[in-house]
Length: 89
Image 1 (cartoon, rainbow, N blue to C red):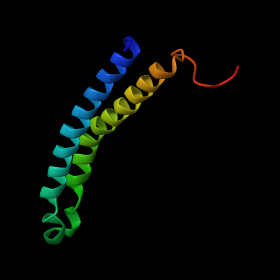
Image 2: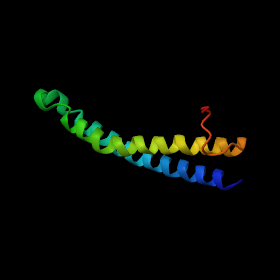
Image 3: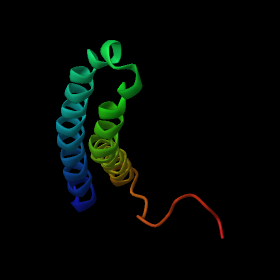
């Protein structure tokens, strides 16, 4: 275990917490808006769109942190440098 693996594990942990909390909250607000789809056709979906904009952004950031953390953990096991993305030039 080195510092890169530890940093990757922290990124994954924070990403999972962000994605779970924000994603479940967004899902709850969208589920609460479902009954409005049948009653108010002209306003249907507006709260869901707002919930996706407000809650979807941190959820996506959390997923990105998970991806970055897993990439760092993989690189720590391979022993590759951090700046090497496989591109030549």
